[in-house]
Length: 548
Image (cartoon, rainbow, N blue to C red; front, side, top):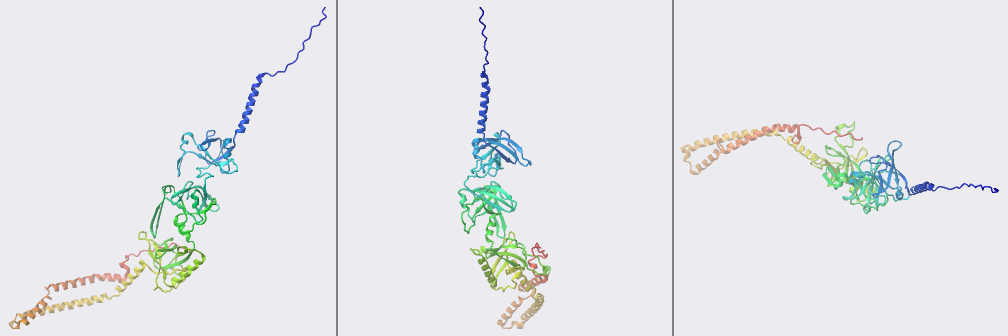
C-alpha cells in the first residue's frame, strides 16, 4: 500500500567564481606591468646646482642634447644656506650613458656676449638646459651648471694651457687667443688662487694651432689700441676688430730666440705679461747695476728710460734719484745719483754667469779709456731724457769707484749743460774786457780827430787867401796846379764836405751805441747767464724721497 517512502533530496554547495572578477584582476595586472615598464624605462635622477632659477620652470624646462629632449626639470628648491638653487631633473634611460664625470650643463637663453648673439630661439619656447656628453668612464649624478657655454667640448682636439698673473680681471671667458692677429683659441675659464694670490686663466688652443706652443712661447695681453709715449717718441699699435672690442691674449716666441721643445702636456703653466714690451725686457734678467752721478738737472729722466751707446740700447734707468741728500752733506753735494742697469742680453747673444763677470771687467777697462755717460734729450715733444754713453779719450781716470753699495759709472756733462757751460765761459771773457777804458780812449780819439779837422779847415782857408794874391798867381802853372789839387783835397775835409759829414755821423752813432751798451755790460757782469735764462730763477724740482 503505501510502503513506499518519499525520497529525500541531497543538497550540495557549489563553489563558482563569477567572471566579473576578471576585470579588476586584469586591471591590476596591467598596472603592475606598467609600473614594471616605468621602473625599467625610467632614467636616473640628477641634481643640478645653479646660481639663479631665472627661466627654470618645474615640468616645463627641458634638458636637451644636440637639440633633442633627454629630460625635464622635476623640482626646484633652495639649498640649506640659501646661496644657490638646487634643481632636480629626470633624465631618460637612453641618455643615462651621457652622464659622466666631465659632462657639462648650461642654461640656453637669449645672450649677447663677446662671441655674438645666441639663444634667440628661446624667446618663444623658453629657456632650456643644454647637456654636453662627457667622455670619461666614471659616472656622476650631481653637476654645477655653467654660467656661460663652454668654449670647447671635453673631447675637442687641441691643448689646454693655464696662464697666471698677479691681478684678476685681465681676461674674460670667451676672449680670443691670437697668433699674429689670427684667432687660434679662446679663454675657457677664469679662477683665482687665494693661497698664491694669483689669477689663473685657462686657455684652449684649437688643433692644429697647438703645435705653435713651445717651451719659450710667451703670452701677453692684447688691447685694441696700444699707445706708448717714451723718450723714443710715440708708438701706436691697433689690433684686430675683435680685440679692439673685447681685448684678448697674444703669443709667440720672441724673435731671435730658440723656440724650445713642443709643449704637449695638458694645463701647462705660463706667465701672462702685460704687453709685448714687458716680454722683451724679461729676456734681459741678467744685468749689472751702476750709479751715475750727474751735476745737471735730471728733470725729464724717468725710470724705464733707455741707456744707449751710439743709438743702441744697452740698459735701463731703474730709479731717479737713487737717494736724497744725506743730513751731513745736505744740498752742498750737487751730484744727483741715478741707478741704472746694464743688461747683458742686450750686449751678448749668450747669457751666463761667466759672460756677466766678463762684462764687468770689460766695462771697467772702458772706464779707464774714457767711457762716460751723459744726459741727452730723447724727445723734443715730451722733454723726456735718456742716458747716452760714449768714449771720450781726453777724459781723466775716474776718482770715485763706489757709491753706497753700487759701482759708479763715470759721467760727463753733455747736451744743453755743455752748451750752457761754454756760453758762460764766453760771457765771462766778455765781462773781463776793459770796456770802460776802451770807451774813454775812443772819446779822446774823437776829440783829437775833431781838432785835426778844424786845423785842416783853417789851413784850407789860409791857402785860399794865398792863392788869391797876385804874387801867387805868378808862380809857375805847375806849382799852381799842385796847390789847386791840395786845395781840393783839403776842401773835402771841410764841415760842408760829404766825407766830413759821414765821419761825424758815424762817430756820433758809435758813441750812442756804446752809451746804450753800458747797462747790458753791467747786467752781464752781475749775471753772465742772463742772455739765455730769464731774470726769474726757476725753482729746481724736489725729488721724491728714495730709499737710503
